[in-house]
Amino acid sequence: MYELISIHENLMSRWVDLRNCETDKMECCFDDSELCMENQQDFGFMKIGKIYNCKILLFGRPLKGDEQITDDCIFCKLIYPKKKIGVRNFFQIEHNGSIYYISEKDVLKAENQKEFWFTSSRKDLIEVDGIVSARYLR
Image 1 (cartoon, rainbow, N blue to C red):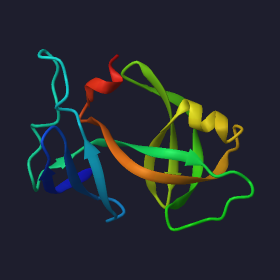
Image 2 (cartoon, one colour):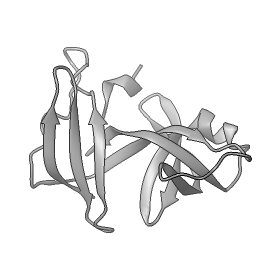
Image 3 (cartoon, one colour):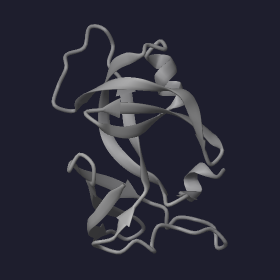
Image 4 (cartoon, rainbow, N blue to C red):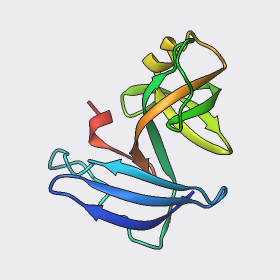
Protein backbone atom coordinates (compact mmCIF):
# COMPACT_ATOMS: atom_id res chain seq x y z
CA MET A 1 0.00 0.00 0.00
CA TYR A 2 1.20 3.47 -0.88
CA GLU A 3 0.24 6.93 0.30
CA LEU A 4 0.11 9.58 -2.43
CA ILE A 5 2.36 12.42 -1.26
CA SER A 6 2.43 14.75 -4.27
CA ILE A 7 1.64 15.08 -7.98
CA HIS A 8 3.74 16.92 -10.57
CA GLU A 9 1.64 17.52 -13.70
CA ASN A 10 3.05 17.69 -17.23
CA LEU A 11 1.12 18.22 -20.46
CA MET A 12 0.09 14.59 -21.10
CA SER A 13 1.66 12.79 -18.15
CA ARG A 14 2.65 13.31 -14.56
CA TRP A 15 5.03 12.20 -11.84
CA VAL A 16 3.62 10.99 -8.55
CA ASP A 17 5.48 10.73 -5.26
CA LEU A 18 4.37 7.72 -3.24
CA ARG A 19 5.33 6.54 0.24
CA ASN A 20 5.38 2.79 0.83
CA CYS A 21 3.30 2.39 4.00
CA GLU A 22 5.22 -0.75 5.06
CA THR A 23 8.84 0.28 4.38
CA ASP A 24 8.40 4.09 4.52
CA LYS A 25 10.41 4.28 1.26
CA MET A 26 9.61 7.12 -1.12
CA GLU A 27 8.98 6.30 -4.79
CA CYS A 28 8.79 8.78 -7.66
CA CYS A 29 6.73 7.15 -10.44
CA PHE A 30 5.86 8.15 -13.98
CA ASP A 31 2.13 8.07 -14.79
CA ASP A 32 0.93 8.34 -18.38
CA SER A 33 -2.39 6.59 -17.75
CA GLU A 34 -4.23 9.67 -19.02
CA LEU A 35 -3.23 8.58 -22.55
CA CYS A 36 -6.12 6.14 -22.76
CA MET A 37 -9.16 5.50 -24.89
CA GLU A 38 -12.37 7.33 -24.06
CA ASN A 39 -13.95 4.37 -22.26
CA GLN A 40 -10.87 3.47 -20.16
CA GLN A 41 -10.16 4.71 -16.66
CA ASP A 42 -6.91 6.47 -15.78
CA PHE A 43 -5.32 7.19 -12.39
CA GLY A 44 -6.76 10.71 -12.18
CA PHE A 45 -8.96 9.59 -9.26
CA MET A 46 -5.94 9.52 -6.93
CA LYS A 47 -5.92 12.18 -4.20
CA ILE A 48 -3.01 13.44 -2.13
CA GLY A 49 -2.98 11.93 1.37
CA LYS A 50 -5.00 8.85 0.38
CA ILE A 51 -3.68 5.27 0.41
CA TYR A 52 -3.75 3.01 -2.66
CA ASN A 53 -2.72 -0.48 -3.67
CA CYS A 54 -0.15 0.28 -6.39
CA LYS A 55 1.94 -1.83 -8.73
CA ILE A 56 5.19 -0.25 -9.87
CA LEU A 57 7.10 -1.32 -12.98
CA LEU A 58 10.88 -0.97 -13.06
CA PHE A 59 12.07 0.25 -16.45
CA GLY A 60 15.59 -0.80 -17.23
CA ARG A 61 17.58 -3.97 -17.72
CA PRO A 62 19.52 -6.60 -15.83
CA LEU A 63 23.24 -5.93 -15.40
CA LYS A 64 25.60 -7.96 -17.51
CA GLY A 65 28.26 -9.94 -15.68
CA ASP A 66 31.07 -7.47 -16.37
CA GLU A 67 29.16 -4.25 -15.62
CA GLN A 68 29.81 -2.14 -12.53
CA ILE A 69 27.13 -1.74 -9.88
CA THR A 70 26.06 1.91 -9.60
CA ASP A 71 23.57 3.91 -7.51
CA ASP A 72 20.88 3.18 -10.14
CA CYS A 73 21.21 -0.58 -9.55
CA ILE A 74 19.05 -2.64 -7.24
CA PHE A 75 19.46 -6.22 -6.10
CA CYS A 76 16.38 -8.20 -7.15
CA LYS A 77 14.99 -11.41 -5.71
CA LEU A 78 12.62 -13.03 -8.18
CA ILE A 79 9.18 -14.08 -6.92
CA TYR A 80 7.40 -16.84 -8.85
CA PRO A 81 5.02 -17.33 -10.62
CA LYS A 82 4.57 -14.70 -13.32
CA LYS A 83 1.72 -12.20 -12.91
CA LYS A 84 -0.53 -11.03 -15.71
CA ILE A 85 -1.29 -7.31 -15.59
CA GLY A 86 -3.65 -6.35 -18.37
CA VAL A 87 -2.52 -8.43 -21.34
CA ARG A 88 1.18 -8.63 -20.44
CA ASN A 89 3.22 -10.94 -18.24
CA PHE A 90 5.45 -9.57 -15.52
CA PHE A 91 7.57 -11.00 -12.76
CA GLN A 92 7.45 -9.68 -9.25
CA ILE A 93 10.74 -8.92 -7.62
CA GLU A 94 11.51 -8.02 -4.05
CA HIS A 95 14.05 -5.37 -3.11
CA ASN A 96 14.56 -4.29 0.51
CA GLY A 97 11.00 -5.22 1.45
CA SER A 98 9.35 -3.52 -1.54
CA ILE A 99 7.66 -5.40 -4.38
CA TYR A 100 8.18 -4.22 -7.96
CA TYR A 101 7.39 -5.63 -11.38
CA ILE A 102 9.70 -6.16 -14.33
CA SER A 103 8.86 -7.32 -17.82
CA GLU A 104 9.04 -10.98 -18.68
CA LYS A 105 11.67 -10.30 -21.36
CA ASP A 106 13.94 -8.58 -18.83
CA VAL A 107 13.87 -11.68 -16.63
CA LEU A 108 14.85 -13.79 -19.63
CA LYS A 109 17.81 -11.43 -20.17
CA ALA A 110 18.84 -12.21 -16.59
CA GLU A 111 19.04 -15.85 -17.73
CA ASN A 112 16.27 -16.84 -15.29
CA GLN A 113 18.43 -16.29 -12.24
CA LYS A 114 16.55 -16.10 -8.96
CA GLU A 115 18.66 -13.12 -7.87
CA PHE A 116 20.26 -10.47 -10.06
CA TRP A 117 21.25 -6.83 -10.28
CA PHE A 118 18.96 -4.56 -12.28
CA THR A 119 19.69 -1.03 -13.43
CA SER A 120 16.51 1.02 -13.30
CA SER A 121 16.13 4.19 -15.31
CA ARG A 122 12.49 4.87 -14.37
CA LYS A 123 9.59 3.59 -12.29
CA ASP A 124 6.14 3.50 -13.88
CA LEU A 125 2.80 3.30 -12.14
CA ILE A 126 1.03 0.43 -13.94
CA GLU A 127 -1.92 -0.45 -11.69
CA VAL A 128 -3.78 1.31 -8.89
CA ASP A 129 -6.54 -0.36 -6.86
CA GLY A 130 -7.19 -2.88 -9.65
CA ILE A 131 -7.29 -0.26 -12.43
CA VAL A 132 -4.65 -1.10 -15.07
CA SER A 133 -2.94 1.60 -17.13
CA ALA A 134 -4.32 1.54 -20.68
CA ARG A 135 -0.81 0.92 -22.07
CA TYR A 136 -0.96 -2.61 -20.62
CA LEU A 137 -4.45 -3.39 -21.95
CA ARG A 138 -3.38 -3.63 -25.60
